[in-house]
Image (cartoon, rainbow, N blue to C red; front, side, top):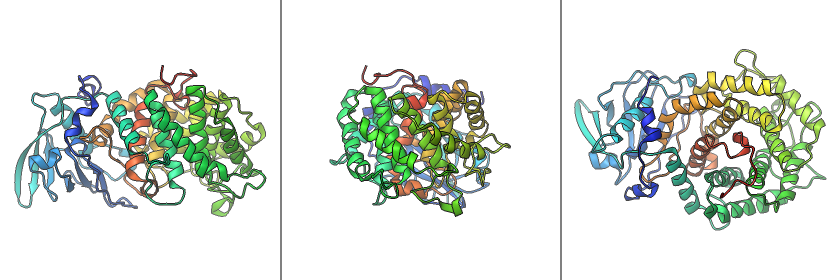
Length: 468
């Protein structure tokens, strides 16, 4: 293993996740680079935002949070991190295939090593103008387990939920429905009965704003397919976890709407009409398949003809070169593979269909895991569905990639115990639309929860597990 200290992150003795509340919560100050000219990202418990451009070895400090460990140590905006823990990094690459390699991984591993020391302290050498300055950053604690980060995120989501059951989106419109479904799913995955009222409140909000607008006699109306799919996935996982069938009708309504919008050629779009001159969006198909598969476990009668029509479009989108799913059957080659590929692998495993194809899709996720944060101008669904597909169809591959992605968790977590948004190297406009703070916490939570394997989308098979 290249970075044996990763194991310290897994097994270090933790304190309560509430212990870091002495530090203010820091929200990374991220600017969207649609073409990848630069990449902004959080610096973990340093409470700062960094920037890298192609070929650089030094992390440029874009922002430092007030009262955080970085500011207390004297870190300033405009500084460039030359070494962390005495290690000088390999250059950063804007290629999505390279994932977290370079300065990001090296900083994360320096943080892991420093937290294992007594006292937990990170040595930084920064370039400040023409000078080299040495800093020693006191870190908030000696170690952290993934379970503590999941619990900290769940507590944060619980505390920031609004009275109407939603979480604050990045914009208005229907962003809150899609994003709130993932936040509620994160609370479900945290598996603590104290979150049950919040989960029900989120479902109530989603059903009132979105499901209630469905008219199956006129599928041109009602919510977008993105919203219908996420709503159905949450409702199905809730029923499977709790045994509560109170929302079975709403689950059926959303699944029926998705089925009604599949064309005779198996194509789907954002809404009823099919975009891109009828080419469609396979990212919609695969979320519909996952919704149908999960609903099927709840007793929903899946329309086999519709499943097969949509599945043919999915099959036609398979890129023979990578083994992953592309944009559509008209455009099977696309670099942002993880959301489509992972969601379909998970759907097939939940439904008990095409296990060889599901494994092939998961193999592609292992081989190209560096692309996991890139999906339709978003990082969230790449991580959420990518790790779901891995956990469902390739258990050993999932364990391998979770180890490799520990730096992602290290740099995502903040000094207050929850997570900051860590996007990809390209356009993150979709996640800005949803709201970087809540969706950032949800994507990290569901990545961690995939290891538990309780949600059926993560390979779970037990029913009624919530709160046991």
